[in-house]
Amino acid sequence: MRILCLHGKGTSAAIFRSQTSSFRAQLADKNIEFDFVDGPHLTTAAAGVDLFYDPPYYAWYDGDGLETVREAHNWLNEYIAANGPYDAAMMFSQGCVLGSSALILHQEETPDMPPPFKAAIFICGGASLSVLEEMGFHVSAEARERDAASRSALVLQAGSMSLMTKGGNRWTGLGSLSDGLSEEELRNEIRSPYRIAIPTVHIYGSKDPRYAAGVHLSGVCEPEKRRTYDHGGGHEIPRTAAVSNSIAKLVQWALEQAETS
Image (cartoon, rainbow, N blue to C red; front, side):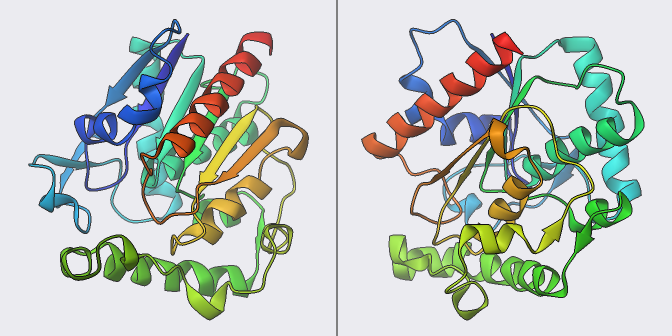
C-alpha cells in the first residue's frame, strides 16, 4: 500500500517524515510505503520550526484563492500521474488544504474519473474556505471569523518566543471563539451541497488554534466514511505512546477502507 505524504507550509518532506516517525514506527511490520514530497515553492520557516529543523522549507502555494490552490492542484495531479498511483494521502496543515481541495475539485469537475487517492488522513488542518465558497458551499460568518482569528493565534502560540518561554503550555487554542461549541455545532457552520465521498480520517487537537478548521473539514466529508480523533494537544503530532498507537490504528483503518473501496 502506498501513501502520499503532504507536509505543512514552511516545513518539508524531511520534517514531515520526522513529525510522523513515532506512529509510523508502529506500522513498520506492515507493507506500507510512505512517499514524502517537497512542495514546489521555497518559503520561510513556519513559526517555531527553525528552532528544530534546518532549511530549506517549502509550501504548496502562496495565498488562499481558488486559482492559487488550483495551480497547486494541477501540480499535484502531474506528480501523481508520474509517481502514482496512491492508495491514500496523509496530510498536515497546508497539505490538508491541498488534499481536500483536490478531492473537492475532482468531485465538481471530473466525478466520473477515479479520485486522486482512495482514502485521506487529515492531520491538524482544514479546507480552504475560499475554495469551498467558490464550489458552492455556504460558509457562515462565524466560521470566517474563527478562521481568521485562528491563523493569527497559531503564529503567536507556535512562535519561537512562545515555545522557549512556555514549552508545551504554549497551546491554548482559540479561547472564547470556540469554547462551548460541540463538534457537530462547528460542522454545521458550513453547509455542503455534496461531501468528499472517500473514507477519511481527521486528527486534530483541542488546544490547537486551528482545531475548528479540522472539525469543519470533517463536516465536509461523508459521516459514514469518516473517523475522527482529538489528540488533545496543539498544532502538532504528539509522540506519546497512546497518541501514536491511536493514529497508527486510524492509518490502518484508512488503508483497509482504500483496499476494499
